Length: 463
Image (cartoon, rainbow, N blue to C red; front, side, top):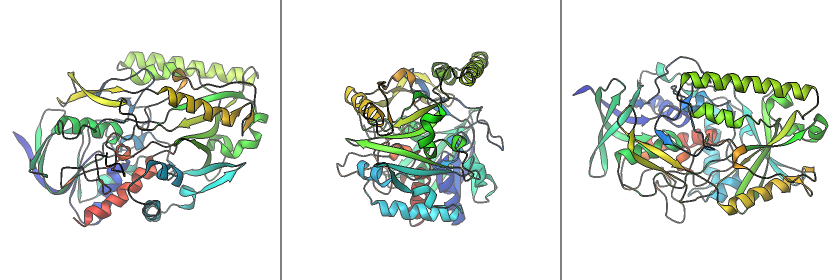
């Protein structure tokens, strides 16, 4: 039996960067909005250490470790406030079905609303025949849910610790949605205008595959990410020429600005920044992320911290270098990389969990290695060395930016959503977030997701 029976103009699934910006805009335009989020940690501040392994994923490869903040604000609770718009090069490579100037206009509009310097978010220039893009750390944009004061808005109702469990539609139009909370209570929400999925690159396809079975066979496929890997064992002298292309905590930028060098090859991209020395404890970190036991997390945390101190000690003794190059790679479409439902497992809301299948093709590995050695190698554009560095799966961190699982329609007509982010086959279901990206570039996707929400809100206001 329903505990609540309420009516809203818009119902949004997810309170992360996509959902918070969308709700914020729509509520300001006097629409009544509901936000549904499965987060159970509803503290009023960020807690970067409270994340858990994604609760709707049953299995994933050892080298793929998605994070789930378990907080209102989604993974904006875990980000480091790094904002940068996708570059025109990445946008053109992805064959988005609208032009870059339109995206740029909505990005400028959002920056104006948030009182940010847009020049820092979209700046691209050259260094030694290598392009670089700029990002900045906007401290005031921590957890976006709290930064935008979503819970204080009279036009927004929040249903935390809850998940959609059923969609009621009349032909191609959704009229109602049922949600369940962790106590097992069911509520019915009536929808006047639209239902919007903003649950992320893994959350969107997971819920859609549960609630709209066999609607579109592409949902959940083409899972892409951008794996990070640290390479090199560098001294301060080695990096002196590239100090401007380093993490903000290394270049000591008072403005918190960062520049990332980038190269492309066959529609693949690699971004590069100077970072502290590579961390051999990444295997422990992966185990920590995937652990579901409090005791094992505590033990792994201690091991990681002690190991980090040991490495710093070696660095002080100059036994190992203090710095490395961090490289982050794009990934193109591959139908073999996907999320699929696992009928043998269910989550706390009685939805079927998903398994992740994700890997690299031989061609991708060849391209990654070629890009690495274009930058760092015998003929390296940045650093000439006789060392041959390889892309190794056991050295990467991946799963932080899952994308492309409900791809926007491009010129090949093979997407899940149209250029206005409307789900094909439905008149009033929309999707936003990294899941709609047609490709996964090297740029942190958060600001682009926020910009897409700004664009989508203008479209929804006219429904």
